[in-house]
Image 1 (cartoon, rainbow, N blue to C red):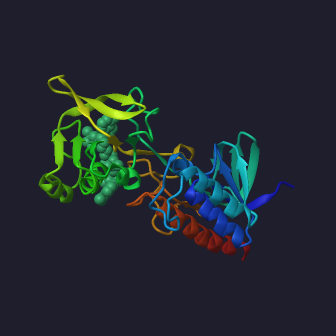
Image 2 (image 1 turned 90 degrees about the vertical axis):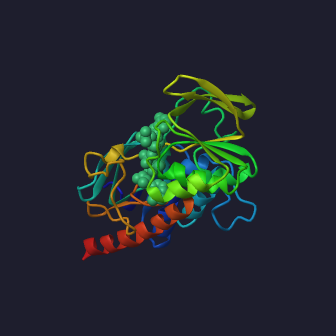
Image 3 (image 1 turned 60 degrees about the horizontal axis):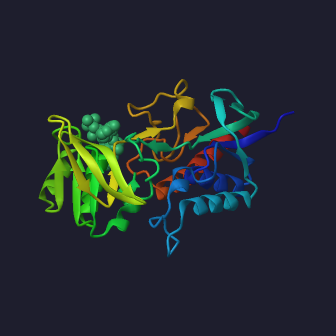
Amino acid sequence: MAKIYDIAIIGGGPAGYSAALYGARAGLATVVLEKLAAGGQMGLTHQIDNYPGFDQGIDGFTLGQQMRAGAERFGAETRLTEVTKLALTENPKRIETTEGTLLARAVILATGANPRHLDIPMEQELTGKGVSYCAFCDGMFYRNKTVVVVGGGNTAAAEALQLSRIAKEVILVHRRDTLRATKIYHEPLQAAENVRFLWNSAVTRLHSEARLTGVTVQNLVTGEETLIPTDGLFVSIGRIPATDLVRDQLALDPGGYIPADETTVTAIPGVFAAGDLRTKPLRQVATAISDGATAVQFAEEYLAGLKE
Ligand code: NAP
């Protein structure tokens, strides 16, 4: 008979491997299903300084490998495979992958969210070389430098404000003539002497010599183009949660995230949402780790109920 795991975790980022560590240490048969490599978004980050315990910081890829090794030390399994279909209301739950079908009593969804890209030439090549998708992660590298932030939502506003305390100048480029961000951000941003706004504008080209050296900004009303020398470009135009797999089984919020509170419990019994793919105010390694641990706590309660 096919093995039935206690917990299958979809996604091997920090939320996934935190759940795997807690699950395996609790003596539960735990498997992580990961498409590429341990680490998720974190694995693409060159230097992580805002996750405690590393006095010199650590690169995200190494941290991902260490999180995987830490969970496997207690017996968690990793399968590098792509999940293609989930039957979440069945008992046990059925997980179809490119390598075959798995069964699990509980499922923790931890597939994360990917930053939305501008989709302009050289964006990918310059990521980590001046182009960033997270000011809270990379802002410190731009002390006393000039940075450009693109976006007009709460994240862009919060990031511009945070960067204004670090950088020499912050230029906020937004495609509308006003911010979408909540009012609480407007006043402090307007008051910050080193924040400049370029309204009705879009970044259309990136310039580089090994690293980013400048951006071309186009005024969307007049069509006029301006070259702005800059050390950093923070693209802050929203995220795309990786929730396509569950779209037909779980109601999602308007942004595509899985509605779940701090318990990570979803609308389907035995299914939990941990990390960036759930509704939450702050998407960071530290909050993902917390979700993974919490998800296992509630998964254990669910599993105990099944055995009664
Ligand atoms: P968001 O609210 O979806 O805002 C994205 C911004 O990027 C919008 O201003 C949008 O412009 C712009 N944009 C989208 N695609 C673009 C493109 N291709 N080129 C240029 N600009 C583009 O995303 P978010 O700011 O990341 O926030 C996500 C969620 O987290 C929101 O619900 C937000 O309220 C919440 N959040 C809350 C806080 C807080 O302090 N309460 C902090 C951070 C995040 P348009 O305005 O023209 O659509």
